[in-house]
Length: 301
Image (tube, rainbow, N blue to C red):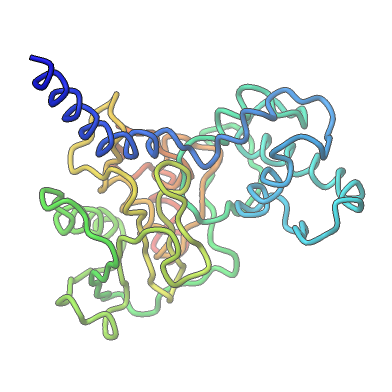
């Protein structure tokens, strides 16, 4: 009896050893440090997370002049910049502008998001005012017949219908523009206009992925045609609320918008080009603002 009990205990321990790292990694939000700064009234460089906060705000377009190599003793000179960056973020997302990381601000900042920086141009919270933004410089494709292919360094589950998700996402943009999209054979990345891939961590560009949660994907504007997705996320062809799954078609639709030249719409949560998306959320239909933005960019309206 004792030997059976010991064997059962050993099996349970083995199962826990196999699955526990996965469970722990799911709880390791790269933006978790923000919670330690919630409601901090005064910038204090002794607080753990201040440097990470500055890196966050710089990465996503709000603190452009921050140099993380500045000695700690000289950082105080940049506190006004940090305060302005927090307020700019709050205005951008139509939050209460205080310069303090209140609960609403921290909640917004911790949401899973696209890695493309926000091109900040504050517009009123008014649905009658267009919220669409263009990538700085207004880069555009001159060729309207674009090819795409897949080139990944990480595998995705066999039951994830990647090609179908992207085909549908490309078709959504084709229906409101004069673009057409055609997949070319794998391995033809040298000839394809757009290269789509799933990767982990450092993957050959200047924007390494950060694991589960945090940054989900990123893309480059015309005519670079690069579109990367974090393989550490749980991607789904049919995500459901309440599960830590990301709807692949929804995120693909967003990233293709960047590939075509659209920037983020921080003031319009219902838009596909809004920077964040929740797990289990589905956004497979272009918003009127998304459509107006792409048609204005390519002189179609």
